[in-house]
Image: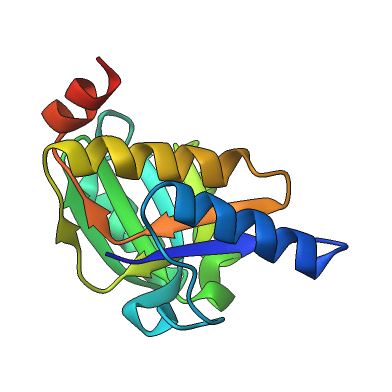
Length: 155
């Protein structure tokens, strides 16, 4: 599985050292810059609760604004677009009177890797530790796990 950590820092050496330490503590390795970037696509992402939006209306507005795709992800619609079109798609969704659950330019995995059992707890701790790092802006992964495994890891 792969993890991308987006950081902002005034001291590159300190940040690299902290991130390397976190990966080591939870059984991972810090690769070279962009070593897993090829596994992800940089995309604009707008997530809207299904209960708030009608599929046809949302899809029409999003596509007209430059969206590439809209997927049914259970309780939500995920609208993806190029990073350049993100603001236009977000504005189109808001023009429908909808407030997105989430909106960002994100690194979306091309493929997911399913993990189970103890690996879920380890991955959750790694993600939390990376997120808690002062210099971290965003963390993305291609790890996929079931809700029941997340609950078991928290117990």
